[in-house]
Length: 192
Image (tube, rainbow, N blue to C red; front, top):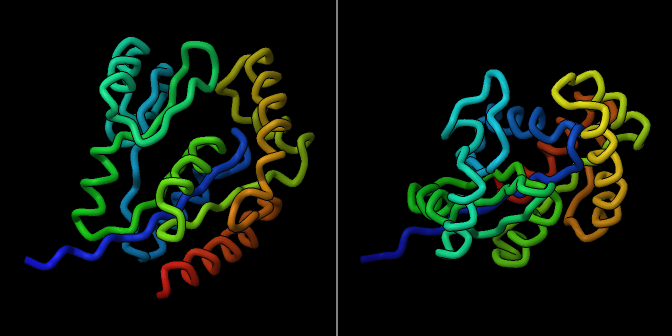
């Protein structure tokens, strides 16, 4: 029986607040046959989020059990006790269905997936126009305390150093321009 051709992987990574989720949703609605890789997390569910759609929500203990069982493609303890990762089963399910997969993952996770899949994946770094603008966006989002925002901004400074390791960097200053640039890079990679 012939092997089903594997899909390609589109990895979108960015510091928190750079607009990656907005850009991922844009790509999902662009008719590119992209299946969304729902990440797992141990952080609490936010208002309006759904388990299995936005994330697979689980306790830190369950997350650690899955790490030990080798069920994650990549994972990171982003903040103390707050884990994020990609379930191998989700990726395999989408590839088996013949889908190209889009990932909305943190910077380290994105680079780890790229290392595994190499030329089968494109890794795109979404950059905020500046750290000052990023802090403003995080504050306007009203989902985090001032202390959490401060931690996210410091982490963003560190994450920005990884940008040159990505295949493509898209600066999300004007959303329409970022959407056009990202769509062009992804369409070219997928060969559409």
